[in-house]
Length: 299
Image 1 (cartoon, rainbow, N blue to C red):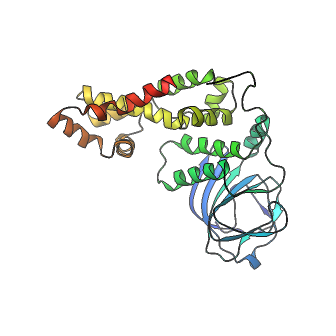
Image 2 (spheres, one colour):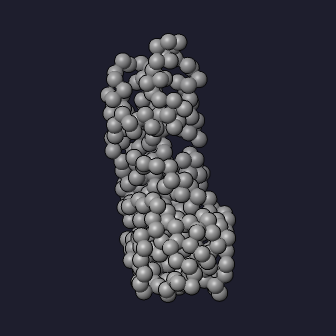
Image 3 (cartoon, rainbow, N blue to C red):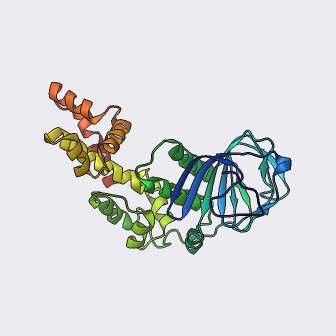
């Protein structure tokens, strides 16, 4: 959205929004600039934010004197940042992530967010920002927890790790098995990462980063694997309708199930069922998720 003024509220930026997602504690947008550099007013961001430059040349005062940087790179602006950061000409593109006050306080309870504007050219922060961008551009998001978890991962990557993990805990954390069980048992709906973390007595960043480190996925992605495993079992062993299988496995509806199944296996569940009827189960396909899940359980 276009906005000009001395103070920019939570989720408001000087640009035209292409994609916008409102999540618990976060506002995520992909935008294009609408001003030339000389027309951008001095402005203050009321809440902390991260700006990921995707295209174009950007003038930024992060890390000191104003510098010209090329994409991609990430900037963290703490709450109260006042600047005239801008694109040289309005033909760029950027991802903007706003943090509500509660999220900022929670993050600082387990880490140390930067207290001055800082930029990242590479490393884990840029990788995490790129992951969030891909998810935002992927289309309809049936499970907002996927984006929410990526926001916490990104937040953790720019924070000091003061208390993400217990210093006495070595190897795979003890809470991981409990987290897996919670996600396997959650047959319907979604559960915010903050709720899972609270139930386990750990920080949301620690939960998100722990799943990424030990299972190479987010908690929501793990939950999706569990649901696809159950759906695959039902396709192979029952004659239920696709709608009933979708609902039984924990999907919102048949469309959600079809989309997730096609993304994982390359074809729709109806086509796979017809293949089963014509030639019987494909052991490699049927065992794909089962073997992956067993491998994760042993890790």
